[in-house]
Amino acid sequence: MGIAYKFGDDINTDYIISSSRKRDTIDPQKLARFLMQDIRPGFGLQAKKGDFLVAGRNFGCGSAMEIAPLVVMAAGIRAVIAKSYARSFYRNAINLGFPVLEADTDPIDEGDLLEVDHSGLIHDITKEKRIHTRPFPPLIKEILDAGGIIPYFERKYPMPYI
Amino acid sequence: MGKTIAEKILGQHAGRDVKAGDFVLAKVDVLMGNDGSLPLVFEASKKMMSFGVRSPKSTFMVLDHYCPSPSKEVSRLHEEIRDFARRYDCLLYDCGEGICHRLLPENGHVLPGMLVVGADSHTVTYGGLNLFATGVGSTDLAVAMNWGVLWFRVPETILLKIDGGLPKGLCAKDVALFLIGSIGASGANSRVIEFRGKAIDEMNMEGRLTLCNMMVEMGAKAAIMPFDEITDHWLNMIEIDRAFQPVEPDDDADYEREIEYEISEMEPQIAIPHKVDNVQPISSAAGIPIDMAFLGTCTNGGFEDLKIAARILKGRNAHPRVRFIVSPASRRVIKEALADGSYQTLIESGAVINPPGCGPCVGAHGGIPTDHTSVISTANRNFLGRMGNHKASIYLSSPATLAASVLRGEITDPREFLQ
Image (cartoon, rainbow over all chains, first blue to last red; front, side, top):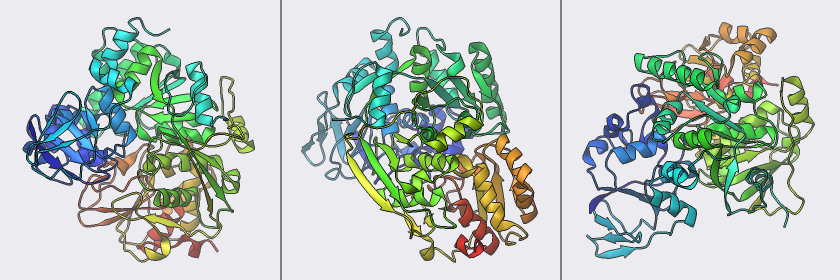
Protein backbone atom coordinates (compact mmCIF):
# COMPACT_ATOMS: atom_id res chain seq x y z
CA MET A 1 0.00 0.00 0.00
CA GLY A 2 1.30 3.44 -0.90
CA ILE A 3 0.33 7.03 -1.59
CA ALA A 4 -0.47 8.27 -5.12
CA TYR A 5 1.48 11.31 -6.26
CA LYS A 6 -0.09 12.79 -9.34
CA PHE A 7 1.61 14.40 -12.33
CA GLY A 8 0.31 15.63 -15.70
CA ASP A 9 0.93 14.76 -19.35
CA ASP A 10 4.30 14.71 -21.15
CA ILE A 11 6.47 14.40 -18.04
CA ASN A 12 9.89 14.30 -19.71
CA THR A 13 13.08 12.64 -18.53
CA ASP A 14 14.70 16.02 -17.80
CA TYR A 15 11.89 16.66 -15.28
CA ILE A 16 12.29 13.19 -13.79
CA ILE A 17 15.99 13.90 -13.28
CA SER A 18 17.69 16.99 -14.63
CA SER A 19 20.50 16.26 -17.12
CA SER A 20 22.67 18.85 -15.41
CA ARG A 21 22.53 16.85 -12.13
CA LYS A 22 24.22 13.91 -13.82
CA ARG A 23 27.41 15.90 -14.10
CA ASP A 24 28.03 15.50 -10.38
CA THR A 25 27.04 11.86 -9.91
CA ILE A 26 25.26 9.04 -11.70
CA ASP A 27 24.51 7.14 -8.50
CA PRO A 28 20.69 6.74 -8.52
CA GLN A 29 20.62 6.63 -4.72
CA LYS A 30 22.29 10.04 -4.54
CA LEU A 31 20.13 11.46 -7.34
CA ALA A 32 16.83 10.20 -5.88
CA ARG A 33 16.39 13.32 -3.74
CA PHE A 34 16.31 15.41 -6.96
CA LEU A 35 13.45 13.39 -8.52
CA MET A 36 11.08 15.86 -10.31
CA GLN A 37 12.94 18.73 -8.67
CA ASP A 38 12.38 21.32 -11.41
CA ILE A 39 8.60 20.84 -11.45
CA ARG A 40 7.94 19.78 -7.83
CA PRO A 41 10.79 20.72 -5.50
CA GLY A 42 11.17 18.39 -2.52
CA PHE A 43 9.29 15.48 -4.10
CA GLY A 44 12.33 13.20 -4.05
CA LEU A 45 12.47 13.42 -0.25
CA GLN A 46 8.70 13.37 0.20
CA ALA A 47 8.06 10.08 -1.67
CA LYS A 48 8.41 7.03 0.58
CA LYS A 49 9.09 3.40 -0.20
CA GLY A 50 6.00 1.79 -1.73
CA ASP A 51 4.44 5.01 -3.04
CA PHE A 52 3.07 5.35 -6.57
CA LEU A 53 3.85 7.86 -9.26
CA VAL A 54 0.63 8.51 -11.21
CA ALA A 55 0.66 10.46 -14.47
CA GLY A 56 -1.17 11.26 -17.69
CA ARG A 57 -0.14 10.63 -21.27
CA ASN A 58 3.38 10.14 -22.68
CA PHE A 59 5.20 9.69 -19.38
CA GLY A 60 9.01 9.68 -19.75
CA CYS A 61 9.31 11.44 -23.10
CA GLY A 62 12.64 12.99 -24.09
CA SER A 63 15.94 11.31 -23.45
CA ALA A 64 16.59 7.55 -23.63
CA MET A 65 18.87 7.78 -20.60
CA GLU A 66 18.28 4.89 -18.24
CA ILE A 67 19.03 7.07 -15.24
CA ALA A 68 15.38 8.27 -15.36
CA PRO A 69 13.74 4.95 -14.39
CA LEU A 70 16.72 4.14 -12.11
CA VAL A 71 16.10 7.33 -10.11
CA VAL A 72 12.36 6.63 -9.91
CA MET A 73 13.21 3.15 -8.56
CA ALA A 74 15.85 4.51 -6.16
CA ALA A 75 13.28 6.92 -4.69
CA GLY A 76 11.33 3.85 -3.56
CA ILE A 77 8.46 4.22 -6.03
CA ARG A 78 6.63 0.88 -6.20
CA ALA A 79 5.28 1.40 -9.74
CA VAL A 80 4.46 4.14 -12.22
CA ILE A 81 0.84 4.25 -13.38
CA ALA A 82 0.21 6.36 -16.47
CA LYS A 83 -2.22 6.65 -19.36
CA SER A 84 0.66 6.02 -21.76
CA TYR A 85 4.46 6.06 -21.92
CA ALA A 86 7.14 7.28 -24.26
CA ARG A 87 8.80 4.20 -25.70
CA SER A 88 12.32 4.57 -24.35
CA PHE A 89 11.23 5.11 -20.74
CA TYR A 90 8.84 2.17 -21.03
CA ARG A 91 11.51 -0.07 -22.57
CA ASN A 92 14.17 0.90 -20.03
CA ALA A 93 11.81 0.27 -17.12
CA ILE A 94 10.84 -3.16 -18.45
CA ASN A 95 14.52 -4.00 -19.02
CA LEU A 96 15.18 -3.12 -15.37
CA GLY A 97 12.25 -5.24 -14.20
CA PHE A 98 10.32 -2.18 -13.01
CA PRO A 99 6.53 -2.19 -13.49
CA VAL A 100 5.14 0.57 -15.70
CA LEU A 101 1.39 0.14 -15.62
CA GLU A 102 -0.98 1.55 -18.21
CA ALA A 103 -4.39 2.59 -16.93
CA ASP A 104 -6.93 5.39 -16.99
CA THR A 105 -5.49 7.52 -14.21
CA ASP A 106 -8.28 10.16 -14.16
CA PRO A 107 -10.15 8.46 -11.27
CA ILE A 108 -7.01 8.55 -9.07
CA ASP A 109 -6.43 11.73 -7.06
CA GLU A 110 -3.31 13.02 -5.37
CA GLY A 111 -2.96 11.41 -1.96
CA ASP A 112 -5.18 8.38 -2.63
CA LEU A 113 -3.99 5.16 -1.00
CA LEU A 114 -3.28 2.55 -3.67
CA GLU A 115 -2.45 -1.12 -3.82
CA VAL A 116 -1.60 -3.18 -6.92
CA ASP A 117 -2.24 -6.93 -6.80
CA HIS A 118 -0.47 -9.75 -8.63
CA SER A 119 -2.91 -9.66 -11.53
CA GLY A 120 -2.08 -5.99 -12.13
CA LEU A 121 -5.39 -4.71 -10.77
CA ILE A 122 -5.15 -1.33 -9.00
CA HIS A 123 -7.13 -0.94 -5.78
CA ASP A 124 -7.84 2.67 -4.91
CA ILE A 125 -8.45 2.17 -1.21
CA THR A 126 -9.41 5.81 -0.58
CA LYS A 127 -12.10 5.70 -3.26
CA GLU A 128 -12.97 2.01 -2.76
CA LYS A 129 -12.54 1.56 -6.49
CA ARG A 130 -10.77 -0.98 -8.69
CA ILE A 131 -8.96 0.15 -11.83
CA HIS A 132 -7.91 -2.22 -14.59
CA THR A 133 -4.47 -2.01 -16.15
CA ARG A 134 -3.66 -2.90 -19.73
CA PRO A 135 -2.18 -6.42 -19.85
CA PHE A 136 1.48 -6.69 -20.89
CA PRO A 137 2.31 -8.43 -24.20
CA PRO A 138 3.68 -11.96 -23.50
CA LEU A 139 7.37 -11.17 -24.13
CA ILE A 140 7.26 -8.10 -21.89
CA LYS A 141 5.56 -10.09 -19.15
CA GLU A 142 8.28 -12.74 -19.43
CA ILE A 143 11.01 -10.10 -19.10
CA LEU A 144 9.29 -8.55 -16.06
CA ASP A 145 8.76 -11.95 -14.46
CA ALA A 146 12.44 -12.80 -14.98
CA GLY A 147 13.37 -9.59 -13.12
CA GLY A 148 14.60 -7.68 -16.16
CA ILE A 149 16.32 -8.17 -19.50
CA ILE A 150 19.67 -9.39 -18.12
CA PRO A 151 18.24 -12.31 -16.09
CA TYR A 152 15.85 -13.00 -19.00
CA PHE A 153 18.70 -13.29 -21.55
CA GLU A 154 20.88 -15.26 -19.14
CA ARG A 155 18.12 -17.80 -18.65
CA LYS A 156 17.12 -17.97 -22.29
CA TYR A 157 20.55 -17.72 -23.94
CA PRO A 158 22.98 -19.01 -21.31
CA MET A 159 25.86 -18.99 -23.78
CA PRO A 160 26.44 -15.71 -25.57
CA TYR A 161 24.05 -15.75 -28.50
CA ILE A 162 25.43 -17.28 -31.70
CA MET B 1 0.49 -6.71 -48.20
CA GLY B 2 3.88 -5.19 -48.95
CA LYS B 3 6.47 -4.16 -46.42
CA THR B 4 7.68 -0.87 -45.02
CA ILE B 5 11.40 -0.10 -44.77
CA ALA B 6 11.30 -0.84 -41.02
CA GLU B 7 9.64 -4.25 -41.57
CA LYS B 8 12.26 -5.11 -44.20
CA ILE B 9 15.27 -4.10 -42.11
CA LEU B 10 14.02 -5.75 -38.91
CA GLY B 11 13.01 -8.86 -40.89
CA GLN B 12 16.45 -9.15 -42.48
CA HIS B 13 18.09 -8.82 -39.07
CA ALA B 14 15.70 -11.26 -37.39
CA GLY B 15 16.13 -13.81 -40.18
CA ARG B 16 12.41 -14.15 -40.85
CA ASP B 17 9.41 -12.48 -42.37
CA VAL B 18 7.99 -9.91 -39.93
CA LYS B 19 5.14 -7.42 -39.80
CA ALA B 20 4.24 -4.52 -37.53
CA GLY B 21 3.25 -5.73 -34.07
CA ASP B 22 5.58 -8.77 -34.06
CA PHE B 23 8.17 -9.12 -31.32
CA VAL B 24 11.55 -10.16 -32.71
CA LEU B 25 15.07 -10.86 -31.63
CA ALA B 26 17.25 -9.05 -34.19
CA LYS B 27 20.96 -8.90 -34.82
CA VAL B 28 22.39 -5.42 -34.38
CA ASP B 29 24.99 -4.12 -36.88
CA VAL B 30 26.36 -1.07 -35.06
CA LEU B 31 26.32 -0.10 -31.38
CA MET B 32 27.03 3.33 -29.97
CA GLY B 33 27.34 4.77 -26.48
CA ASN B 34 28.47 8.15 -25.18
CA ASP B 35 29.69 9.65 -21.92
CA GLY B 36 26.08 10.26 -20.92
CA SER B 37 25.15 6.58 -21.13
CA LEU B 38 28.31 4.44 -21.01
CA PRO B 39 28.94 4.63 -17.26
CA LEU B 40 25.58 2.91 -16.73
CA VAL B 41 26.40 0.39 -19.47
CA PHE B 42 29.38 -0.65 -17.36
CA GLU B 43 27.12 -0.92 -14.29
CA ALA B 44 24.74 -3.13 -16.29
CA SER B 45 27.63 -5.30 -17.54
CA LYS B 46 28.66 -5.96 -13.92
CA LYS B 47 25.24 -7.53 -13.29
CA MET B 48 25.98 -10.22 -15.91
CA MET B 49 27.48 -13.60 -15.11
CA SER B 50 29.91 -13.14 -18.00
CA PHE B 51 30.45 -10.12 -20.19
CA GLY B 52 32.33 -9.40 -23.39
CA VAL B 53 31.99 -7.26 -26.51
CA ARG B 54 31.08 -9.52 -29.42
CA SER B 55 31.78 -7.05 -32.23
CA PRO B 56 34.28 -4.48 -30.94
CA LYS B 57 34.91 -3.08 -34.43
CA SER B 58 31.23 -2.18 -34.70
CA THR B 59 31.01 -0.78 -31.16
CA PHE B 60 31.68 2.96 -30.92
CA MET B 61 32.24 5.05 -27.81
CA VAL B 62 32.03 8.82 -28.01
CA LEU B 63 32.91 11.41 -25.38
CA ASP B 64 30.70 14.35 -26.33
CA HIS B 65 28.32 15.37 -23.54
CA TYR B 66 30.76 16.74 -21.02
CA CYS B 67 33.81 17.80 -23.02
CA PRO B 68 36.38 18.87 -22.01
CA SER B 69 35.58 17.54 -18.57
CA PRO B 70 34.05 20.17 -16.25
CA SER B 71 34.63 18.23 -13.00
CA LYS B 72 36.75 15.60 -11.24
CA GLU B 73 33.80 13.20 -11.27
CA VAL B 74 33.35 13.49 -15.06
CA SER B 75 37.12 13.12 -15.56
CA ARG B 76 36.94 9.85 -13.62
CA LEU B 77 34.02 8.60 -15.76
CA HIS B 78 35.85 9.59 -18.96
CA GLU B 79 38.87 7.61 -17.81
CA GLU B 80 36.64 4.59 -17.13
CA ILE B 81 35.31 4.81 -20.69
CA ARG B 82 38.85 5.04 -22.13
CA ASP B 83 39.90 2.01 -20.07
CA PHE B 84 36.86 0.05 -21.19
CA ALA B 85 37.43 0.91 -24.87
CA ARG B 86 41.07 -0.23 -24.57
CA ARG B 87 40.20 -3.43 -22.71
CA TYR B 88 37.58 -4.53 -25.25
CA ASP B 89 39.25 -2.98 -28.32
CA CYS B 90 36.28 -0.73 -29.17
CA LEU B 91 36.74 2.44 -31.23
CA LEU B 92 36.81 5.56 -29.06
CA TYR B 93 36.21 9.14 -30.17
CA ASP B 94 37.66 11.24 -27.38
CA CYS B 95 36.69 14.74 -26.25
CA GLY B 96 36.83 17.31 -29.01
CA GLU B 97 36.15 14.97 -31.94
CA GLY B 98 32.47 15.82 -31.98
CA ILE B 99 28.94 14.62 -31.30
CA CYS B 100 28.16 10.92 -31.73
CA HIS B 101 25.20 11.60 -34.02
CA ARG B 102 27.43 13.42 -36.51
CA LEU B 103 30.66 11.44 -36.08
CA LEU B 104 29.30 8.03 -37.03
CA PRO B 105 27.81 9.21 -40.37
CA GLU B 106 30.87 11.39 -41.18
CA ASN B 107 33.20 8.46 -40.63
CA GLY B 108 31.23 5.96 -42.66
CA HIS B 109 30.27 3.75 -39.71
CA VAL B 110 26.51 3.81 -40.38
CA LEU B 111 25.32 2.78 -43.82
CA PRO B 112 22.06 2.12 -45.69
CA GLY B 113 20.14 -0.99 -44.64
CA MET B 114 21.76 -1.29 -41.21
CA LEU B 115 20.14 -1.84 -37.83
CA VAL B 116 21.85 0.54 -35.40
CA VAL B 117 21.27 1.06 -31.69
CA GLY B 118 22.72 3.89 -29.63
CA ALA B 119 22.32 4.60 -25.96
CA ASP B 120 21.03 8.11 -26.67
CA SER B 121 17.60 9.17 -27.90
CA HIS B 122 18.89 11.16 -30.87
CA THR B 123 20.38 8.02 -32.42
CA VAL B 124 17.39 8.32 -34.80
CA THR B 125 19.52 10.90 -36.66
CA TYR B 126 21.29 8.14 -38.60
CA GLY B 127 18.04 7.27 -40.39
CA GLY B 128 18.91 10.11 -42.78
CA LEU B 129 21.17 7.53 -44.43
CA ASN B 130 18.33 5.07 -45.19
CA LEU B 131 18.76 2.80 -42.18
CA PHE B 132 16.93 1.85 -38.99
CA ALA B 133 18.54 3.54 -35.98
CA THR B 134 16.96 3.79 -32.58
CA GLY B 135 17.82 5.05 -29.12
CA VAL B 136 18.00 2.50 -26.32
CA GLY B 137 18.95 2.50 -22.66
CA SER B 138 22.23 1.50 -21.09
CA THR B 139 21.11 -2.00 -20.09
CA ASP B 140 19.96 -2.58 -23.69
CA LEU B 141 23.36 -1.51 -24.98
CA ALA B 142 25.14 -3.82 -22.52
CA VAL B 143 22.92 -6.73 -23.63
CA ALA B 144 23.55 -5.92 -27.31
CA MET B 145 27.31 -5.78 -26.69
CA ASN B 146 27.29 -9.17 -24.99
CA TRP B 147 24.74 -11.07 -27.08
CA GLY B 148 24.84 -9.16 -30.39
CA VAL B 149 21.05 -9.08 -30.52
CA LEU B 150 18.15 -7.17 -28.92
CA TRP B 151 14.40 -7.54 -28.68
CA PHE B 152 12.24 -5.23 -30.75
CA ARG B 153 8.57 -4.75 -31.30
CA VAL B 154 8.28 -4.26 -35.07
CA PRO B 155 6.78 -0.77 -35.25
CA GLU B 156 3.96 0.60 -37.35
CA THR B 157 5.09 3.20 -39.88
CA ILE B 158 3.70 6.65 -40.58
CA LEU B 159 4.44 7.92 -44.08
CA LEU B 160 5.06 11.66 -44.26
CA LYS B 161 4.95 13.15 -47.75
CA ILE B 162 6.53 16.58 -47.71
CA ASP B 163 5.69 18.28 -50.97
CA GLY B 164 6.49 21.71 -52.36
CA GLY B 165 9.90 23.36 -52.39
CA LEU B 166 11.46 24.60 -49.17
CA PRO B 167 10.92 28.40 -49.26
CA LYS B 168 13.94 30.70 -49.29
CA GLY B 169 15.32 31.39 -45.82
CA LEU B 170 13.85 28.23 -44.37
CA CYS B 171 15.84 25.19 -43.19
CA ALA B 172 15.16 21.51 -42.54
CA LYS B 173 14.75 22.53 -38.87
CA ASP B 174 11.68 24.61 -39.74
CA VAL B 175 10.13 21.54 -41.37
CA ALA B 176 10.99 19.45 -38.30
CA LEU B 177 9.42 21.96 -35.90
CA PHE B 178 6.36 22.30 -38.11
CA LEU B 179 5.85 18.51 -38.16
CA ILE B 180 6.27 18.22 -34.37
CA GLY B 181 3.81 21.07 -33.83
CA SER B 182 1.35 19.40 -36.14
CA ILE B 183 1.71 15.79 -34.97
CA GLY B 184 2.43 16.46 -31.26
CA ALA B 185 4.98 15.29 -28.70
CA SER B 186 3.51 11.80 -28.50
CA GLY B 187 1.89 11.74 -31.95
CA ALA B 188 4.35 9.22 -33.36
CA ASN B 189 5.12 7.31 -30.16
CA SER B 190 6.90 4.02 -30.95
CA ARG B 191 6.17 4.53 -34.66
CA VAL B 192 8.63 4.77 -37.50
CA ILE B 193 8.51 7.80 -39.78
CA GLU B 194 9.22 7.24 -43.47
CA PHE B 195 9.80 10.36 -45.51
CA ARG B 196 8.92 11.02 -49.11
CA GLY B 197 8.11 13.97 -51.38
CA LYS B 198 9.63 16.77 -53.41
CA ALA B 199 10.99 18.71 -50.41
CA ILE B 200 12.79 15.54 -49.29
CA ASP B 201 14.15 14.83 -52.78
CA GLU B 202 15.69 18.31 -52.78
CA MET B 203 17.01 18.21 -49.22
CA ASN B 204 20.75 17.72 -48.71
CA MET B 205 22.12 15.08 -46.33
CA GLU B 206 22.70 17.50 -43.45
CA GLY B 207 19.07 18.58 -43.68
CA ARG B 208 17.92 14.97 -43.74
CA LEU B 209 19.96 14.18 -40.64
CA THR B 210 18.44 17.24 -38.90
CA LEU B 211 14.92 16.19 -39.81
CA CYS B 212 15.41 12.58 -38.66
CA ASN B 213 17.10 13.82 -35.47
CA MET B 214 14.02 15.78 -34.37
CA MET B 215 11.51 13.01 -35.01
CA VAL B 216 12.21 11.50 -31.59
CA GLU B 217 10.57 14.66 -30.19
CA MET B 218 7.24 13.26 -31.33
CA GLY B 219 8.09 9.85 -29.92
CA ALA B 220 9.32 8.14 -33.09
CA LYS B 221 11.35 4.97 -32.66
CA ALA B 222 13.17 5.62 -35.94
CA ALA B 223 12.92 8.00 -38.89
CA ILE B 224 14.03 6.77 -42.30
CA MET B 225 14.88 8.67 -45.46
CA PRO B 226 14.73 7.16 -48.94
CA PHE B 227 17.97 6.15 -50.67
CA ASP B 228 18.59 8.33 -53.75
CA GLU B 229 21.30 10.20 -55.66
CA ILE B 230 21.83 12.53 -52.71
CA THR B 231 22.53 9.58 -50.39
CA ASP B 232 24.75 7.96 -53.00
CA HIS B 233 26.67 11.17 -53.65
CA TRP B 234 27.14 11.80 -49.92
CA LEU B 235 28.46 8.26 -49.37
CA ASN B 236 30.89 8.74 -52.23
CA MET B 237 32.35 11.79 -50.48
CA ILE B 238 33.31 9.91 -47.31
CA GLU B 239 35.39 6.84 -46.61
CA ILE B 240 33.46 3.65 -46.12
CA ASP B 241 34.93 0.24 -45.54
CA ARG B 242 32.07 -2.14 -46.23
CA ALA B 243 29.32 -2.92 -48.70
CA PHE B 244 25.77 -1.81 -48.04
CA GLN B 245 22.29 -2.56 -49.30
CA PRO B 246 19.81 0.31 -49.76
CA VAL B 247 16.23 -0.46 -48.73
CA GLU B 248 13.03 0.82 -50.28
CA PRO B 249 9.46 0.14 -49.23
CA ASP B 250 7.14 -2.01 -51.33
CA ASP B 251 4.60 -0.11 -53.45
CA ASP B 252 1.78 -1.65 -51.43
CA ALA B 253 3.49 -1.24 -48.04
CA ASP B 254 1.06 -1.18 -45.14
CA TYR B 255 1.30 2.25 -43.50
CA GLU B 256 -0.59 3.05 -40.32
CA ARG B 257 -1.14 6.61 -41.56
CA GLU B 258 -0.13 8.66 -44.55
CA ILE B 259 0.04 12.41 -44.06
CA GLU B 260 0.75 14.94 -46.79
CA TYR B 261 2.16 18.39 -46.22
CA GLU B 262 2.67 21.19 -48.71
CA ILE B 263 5.40 23.51 -47.43
CA SER B 264 6.01 26.01 -50.21
CA GLU B 265 4.11 28.71 -48.26
CA MET B 266 5.51 27.77 -44.84
CA GLU B 267 6.94 30.43 -42.52
CA PRO B 268 10.01 29.90 -40.31
CA GLN B 269 8.90 28.07 -37.15
CA ILE B 270 9.66 28.55 -33.44
CA ALA B 271 9.07 26.19 -30.49
CA ILE B 272 7.88 28.26 -27.55
CA PRO B 273 8.85 27.35 -23.94
CA HIS B 274 8.62 24.78 -22.44
CA LYS B 275 7.46 22.11 -24.89
CA VAL B 276 8.93 21.11 -28.23
CA ASP B 277 5.45 20.72 -29.77
CA ASN B 278 4.42 24.22 -28.73
CA VAL B 279 5.28 25.48 -32.20
CA GLN B 280 4.30 28.84 -33.73
CA PRO B 281 5.05 30.52 -37.05
CA ILE B 282 7.65 33.23 -36.62
CA SER B 283 5.13 36.02 -37.19
CA SER B 284 3.56 35.27 -33.82
CA ALA B 285 6.88 35.13 -31.94
CA ALA B 286 8.84 37.93 -33.65
CA GLY B 287 9.94 40.69 -31.30
CA ILE B 288 10.41 38.57 -28.17
CA PRO B 289 13.69 39.82 -26.61
CA ILE B 290 16.49 37.28 -26.24
CA ASP B 291 19.55 37.35 -24.00
CA MET B 292 21.46 34.32 -25.18
CA ALA B 293 21.75 32.41 -28.44
CA PHE B 294 23.13 28.91 -28.86
CA LEU B 295 24.04 27.56 -32.29
CA GLY B 296 25.03 23.90 -32.32
CA THR B 297 24.00 20.40 -31.12
CA CYS B 298 23.39 17.12 -32.92
CA THR B 299 20.42 18.85 -34.57
CA ASN B 300 22.05 21.96 -36.01
CA GLY B 301 25.78 21.98 -35.37
CA GLY B 302 26.72 20.98 -38.91
CA PHE B 303 28.69 22.87 -41.53
CA GLU B 304 25.58 23.98 -43.46
CA ASP B 305 24.12 25.30 -40.21
CA LEU B 306 27.19 27.39 -39.42
CA LYS B 307 27.32 28.51 -43.02
CA ILE B 308 23.78 29.88 -43.22
CA ALA B 309 24.22 31.61 -39.86
CA ALA B 310 27.48 33.16 -41.09
CA ARG B 311 25.80 34.34 -44.28
CA ILE B 312 23.33 36.38 -42.23
CA LEU B 313 25.92 37.57 -39.70
CA LYS B 314 28.62 38.58 -42.18
CA GLY B 315 29.82 42.14 -41.66
CA ARG B 316 27.43 42.64 -38.73
CA ASN B 317 27.71 42.44 -34.95
CA ALA B 318 25.67 40.52 -32.42
CA HIS B 319 23.26 42.73 -30.47
CA PRO B 320 25.13 43.92 -27.35
CA ARG B 321 22.70 42.19 -24.97
CA VAL B 322 23.05 38.78 -26.63
CA ARG B 323 25.59 36.23 -25.43
CA PHE B 324 26.22 34.24 -28.60
CA ILE B 325 27.62 30.73 -28.19
CA VAL B 326 28.51 28.26 -30.93
CA SER B 327 29.36 24.57 -30.53
CA PRO B 328 30.34 22.99 -33.85
CA ALA B 329 29.14 19.37 -34.12
CA SER B 330 32.56 17.98 -34.99
CA ARG B 331 36.17 18.72 -35.77
CA ARG B 332 35.37 18.22 -39.45
CA VAL B 333 32.70 20.93 -39.23
CA ILE B 334 35.32 23.35 -37.87
CA LYS B 335 37.71 22.53 -40.71
CA GLU B 336 34.99 23.06 -43.31
CA ALA B 337 33.82 26.29 -41.69
CA LEU B 338 37.43 27.55 -41.52
CA ALA B 339 37.99 26.69 -45.16
CA ASP B 340 34.97 28.66 -46.40
CA GLY B 341 35.34 31.55 -43.93
CA SER B 342 32.14 30.91 -41.95
CA TYR B 343 34.14 30.25 -38.79
CA GLN B 344 35.93 33.61 -39.04
CA THR B 345 32.62 35.38 -39.69
CA LEU B 346 31.07 33.86 -36.57
CA ILE B 347 34.02 35.00 -34.42
CA GLU B 348 33.95 38.50 -35.92
CA SER B 349 30.25 38.83 -35.23
CA GLY B 350 30.91 38.18 -31.53
CA ALA B 351 30.43 34.43 -31.13
CA VAL B 352 32.15 32.50 -28.35
CA ILE B 353 33.06 29.18 -29.91
CA ASN B 354 33.04 26.06 -27.74
CA PRO B 355 34.94 22.89 -28.61
CA PRO B 356 32.96 20.33 -30.67
CA GLY B 357 30.41 18.49 -28.54
CA CYS B 358 26.96 18.82 -27.03
CA GLY B 359 27.91 22.06 -25.32
CA PRO B 360 25.26 23.83 -23.25
CA CYS B 361 22.34 21.82 -24.72
CA VAL B 362 22.08 19.59 -21.64
CA GLY B 363 23.04 22.27 -19.14
CA ALA B 364 26.28 20.71 -18.01
CA HIS B 365 28.72 23.45 -19.02
CA GLY B 366 29.74 25.80 -21.80
CA GLY B 367 27.10 28.48 -21.22
CA ILE B 368 24.39 28.13 -18.59
CA PRO B 369 21.59 30.73 -18.98
CA THR B 370 21.01 33.43 -16.35
CA ASP B 371 17.82 33.50 -14.22
CA HIS B 372 14.77 35.07 -15.89
CA THR B 373 16.36 35.26 -19.32
CA SER B 374 15.34 33.96 -22.74
CA VAL B 375 17.52 31.80 -24.93
CA ILE B 376 17.15 31.10 -28.63
CA SER B 377 18.71 27.76 -29.48
CA THR B 378 19.05 25.45 -32.46
CA ALA B 379 18.84 22.43 -30.13
CA ASN B 380 16.06 19.86 -30.03
CA ARG B 381 14.57 20.33 -26.55
CA ASN B 382 13.28 23.38 -24.71
CA PHE B 383 12.11 21.66 -21.53
CA LEU B 384 12.16 23.70 -18.35
CA GLY B 385 15.67 23.42 -16.87
CA ARG B 386 17.09 21.72 -19.95
CA MET B 387 20.05 24.09 -20.23
CA GLY B 388 20.82 23.90 -16.52
CA ASN B 389 18.60 26.72 -15.21
CA HIS B 390 14.90 26.17 -14.62
CA LYS B 391 14.39 29.93 -14.36
CA ALA B 392 15.34 30.43 -18.03
CA SER B 393 13.09 30.08 -21.11
CA ILE B 394 14.25 28.34 -24.28
CA TYR B 395 12.98 29.04 -27.82
CA LEU B 396 13.97 26.55 -30.53
CA SER B 397 14.63 27.72 -34.08
CA SER B 398 16.57 27.13 -37.26
CA PRO B 399 20.16 28.41 -37.53
CA ALA B 400 18.97 31.15 -39.91
CA THR B 401 16.34 32.43 -37.46
CA LEU B 402 18.91 32.24 -34.68
CA ALA B 403 21.41 34.35 -36.63
CA ALA B 404 18.83 37.03 -37.48
CA SER B 405 17.73 37.08 -33.82
CA VAL B 406 21.35 37.46 -32.65
CA LEU B 407 21.61 40.66 -34.71
CA ARG B 408 18.37 42.23 -33.46
CA GLY B 409 18.42 40.93 -29.87
CA GLU B 410 14.88 39.69 -30.42
CA ILE B 411 13.24 36.85 -32.31
CA THR B 412 13.53 37.87 -35.94
CA ASP B 413 12.39 36.50 -39.29
CA PRO B 414 15.61 35.59 -41.15
CA ARG B 415 14.07 36.26 -44.55
CA GLU B 416 14.65 39.99 -43.95
CA PHE B 417 18.39 39.28 -44.18
CA LEU B 418 18.30 36.87 -47.09
CA GLN B 419 16.84 39.01 -49.88
